[in-house]
Image (cartoon, rainbow, N blue to C red; front, side, top):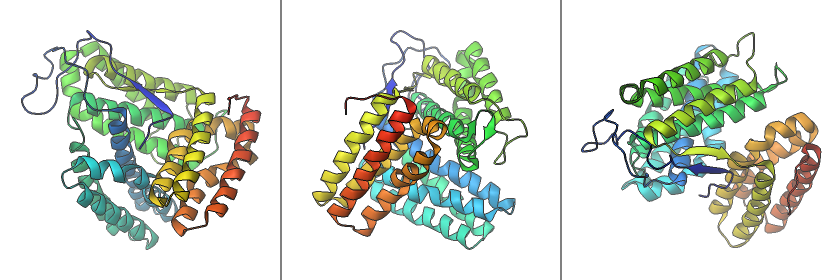
Length: 365
């Protein structure tokens, strides 16, 4: 799986950082200088996708308990529709029994979706709890998956993603997309839970930075208090700024890899490249890889620029978002012909051109 739309940078050399969480590491809070982490941005992206599955399930259960089964169904299906394609290969590769983890996740996410469809809140809760346990095991199997640096990196990535989701949800102070608001709430909730596992050590090692992190989380909690938005909506810039503060402090204190979003022109160029790869990979007889590339084009690229398209060309987004978001993968899974896939990709390129023109983006593609 490639990480094309987001670049990660390591903490600068010489910064005092915490040691690893795992047994035998430097004592937490000792101010030990640690080497640059051996895990990769791809590992962080995999763990972030796993945790996003957890976030969707948290919201699904919360909505089911509030008797909003329609909303619960949407979020229970998101892991299957959007995220599983991103993690299968990486989880299977890194864990000794990775194939079993993937099989468990496929079964558990489907069970959650089925329970939501049946409006069975108890079964939904049970399925999501089983999924959360598997996610913990799968993350721990990733390189340095239980270290402070890795947990901090995943926390930062989730918060950055939440900022993008909130930007799509709230435009000019008005709620435009409830589901994206709920996505932001879900990812902040999981990020908070992850940070809590390393917070005592951060506080012991760097009290001032820990206070700044807590203040930023308080801002996010006020903006995203639950699955239903507050009466007064926070500005998207404030949400993004709070997420950035936490990411920066985690970079300084635990050596987290911090996501830095590429500019719009680079994102659009990435999407064009991925569309080429989807076509060639499918024609080469590997529909599973083509579906994964389609997921990457949407989740790791289009979602970064979607808010600007919604604002400048909502009609274009209304067709382009589902085309990239689910339709390509659904048709690939259905076994359409290469020619039919080519027609879909050509249409996506036409819409991308319109979106770029509307948003003022420029690329050499």
